[in-house]
Image 1 (cartoon, rainbow, N blue to C red):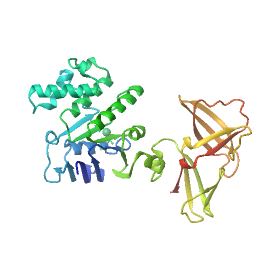
Image 2 (image 1 turned 60 degrees about the vertical axis):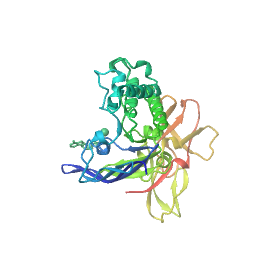
Image 3 (image 1 turned 30 degrees about the vertical axis):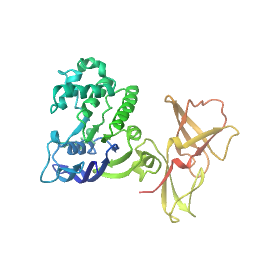
Length: 352
Ligand SMILES: Nc1ncnc2c1ncn2[C@@H]1O[C@H](COP(=O)(O)OP(=O)(O)O)[C@@H](O)[C@H]1O
Ligand SMILES: [Mg+2]
């Protein structure tokens, strides 16, 4: 199969194990994202795939060619890989065109220039070909870096937190453009990031890497968000509301009523995690089966508000919850507020 295969990769720096038996596949045309907190070994894994870090254990195969195994390893320049790394900036002394033709040293000058201009055109930067990097904005430099990575028609592209230096608006635009150019070129792409939203946006498939360098869950973005395998994965996306309880007759009794618990025996302690976006509010006479809450505070974040609530009835009375609701939440003159939970945002795990 075309694309990248990494099998059984382990890596240690001295006595510290950072990658523990990682296997992954990225097909041609596919974008796989490795998502995990800072320090969990993401950059190390990309450097192993690229050949900048010596493989210690496992194998790396690209387009059915073994490029690294314990005894023999191809140098990076022979792997036909394109890179966009945080610290892999454009060459400041070369023009934009010079930067993109740099990786095309095997071609004649005319062919290299033609190919480089084609790629600059694809990323909308052809008119800047004669400029130097310092004359471009961060987003424009990023587009050039993408053109440079793709110009030699790599078999694999490696992206290491490629948008982290850009401001919010520019980041959203550049990642959309980058995704579209990668898909047009039908190249296998392995990207790493600590930003779950970025992973959700870019990836066909996500692999969640946890502490200790193990893959905790692999799946499509919607699997990771709607069916997180454990509490750690569920919490990647930010604050979680917690309701602990004991299973009784297949249910957990809560202020929201009896919540059905899947395959759990009576008497077992379970934990419900509820995403803030899974808590909705109604007011006044519009109880709709909700539970009464006191509003502690409300903060407008832009397109949504974060509302802190305290449950005022039932077994969880006194517990605090966070709701994330669209638009601005008006705290005044609403009368009683009722909270509801959307079952799609409620996850059940055994209590530790
Ligand atoms: N060359 C190195 N020598 C020793 N330790 C390293 C080296 N490179 C990275 N580390 C350590 O290995 C762990 C993983 O690093 P890294 O792969 O950069 O993680 P990430 O990219 O997920 O933030 C970190 O604890 C880091 O400090
Ligand atoms: Mg890193």
